[in-house]
Image (cartoon, rainbow, N blue to C red):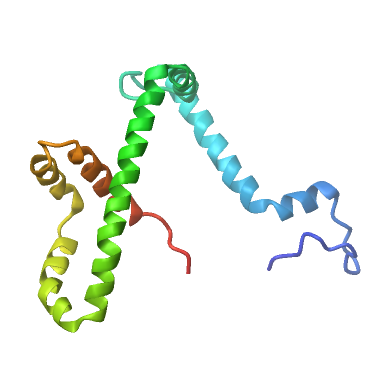
Length: 165
């Protein structure tokens, strides 16, 4: 049974909660989640520095942060980020421009659903990662291969996102 954190008057026989206890109860989810993250990072750091794990296979968080900091000051890195972001936005925009009207059309037309349904069902059953080599081969002649590849990868990760209920 959860006890409200903002309980000012304690019941008979109970003592009032300190401000620290009230603060913890109000932010319990953040405290537990953040504490778990810190604990995992500390164990990871300890394993990396202890020499039990070869640095070739796994580095430790402070080295990763240092490398990230150095990379963030590299001009080429930001150029690459800009190109990747542009290609991602173009691919996502193209997918939206094609998928939304097509989905609405299939949803509104029974005949179009009969016509395209088998293809949609088949492609839905195929693991997306198996389509990536085909996308690369089909689009190899143009820069669209990167756009299509990023769009396919984004769609794959979209399934892992929690959806609001």
